[in-house]
Length: 502
Image (cartoon, rainbow, N blue to C red; front, top):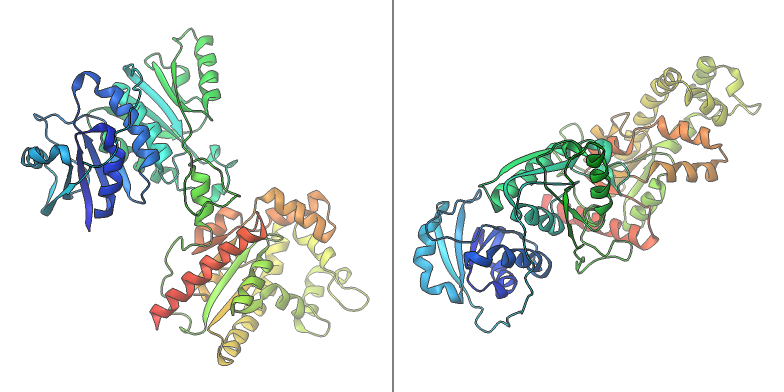
């Protein structure tokens, strides 16, 4: 199988079929070049942008080059090509095609893609109007086929310059699982690479977008804005701003939403191709590989389970227990160490006052919480008292469970990230839910006011902090079945990893 391929298609009406047949020969990127007459090339390419990215169902990265094939022009791709493919109609010209490719890998091969028996689709080609300056915007998280349609249609309609605004962190926090969205720098780089791949002859300005408008509200050069059915309202607002400044109204080209035909699509996921679906499908999968930890023994294999109050991490821990893991709840250990007669109980009374101790000698956790969750310095003082004692007892129990024969031990702790206890684990798994949902759950569970619950949530590491260190992320925000599917994926991957370690 080739790393990267270039597919030449002479019969545009069979382009998506040729792509599906060719995809089995390529592992990473497959460029597609369509050979068509120049006079109606834009109309044909516009139709094939939609066909290829919606109908050619494959897991590889397909990139339709929007400039039609011209014999006099060299073809240079960003990725080296180690496989040239051609459909039945292109077979007679294969040598000419090969010579036009200037980014061939030394050991390249040729492969005929037989489309002779494939049906021809009768497509109605829409008129494509050309503009010098075109603009569009979006999140562009983990570039998918819907993004490729949006970007490709913008590039196809531009004769000179395309500006792309990529939403910065201040504009993404209302999105589903926004904590899993790639950094804006990475998204910008990915968009720019795609644009240069599909047409390297245009000027591109790809920048972090910090508001709805970007430069489109006051730059007279822009003539067209490309949007999806979901974001067309944004184009209306931009034109309202331009009208206030007596600027020309932007033409608007609207892209239909692509339907998601993922074979494993769950009913909780959207029916359109979306980055939200992609992020949901990342739950329970390995986001970053574990690193060797020379500070702890290889066995038992210790998973740190992080998550804020009311995130559902104890429920996740129970599910992992049912899979065969041993569970150590560090929060329960802390409460055990609070018991009357133990050193920590006395130390807390001395540090925070006798009024945080009940008449039975127990630590009044509600009173103590009112003190520490409203004053960061007091919380830090409590942590410095409690954390060393808890981690010492936890590590003693890990060793004991290993001796009992447990292969996997899960260390559950709300302070896992802040205390950096993940440094004593082989992997960190994090549990996140939206903060507003956590506040509601905490109010209901602990009988707190909204302000008390908010103080406790905000005193802990944010979801973003948890995700930044995590190997695997769970979100028990949806149904029981959806949560269980995340656990099943994670446990299967863990066992495959551990089997390979033996």
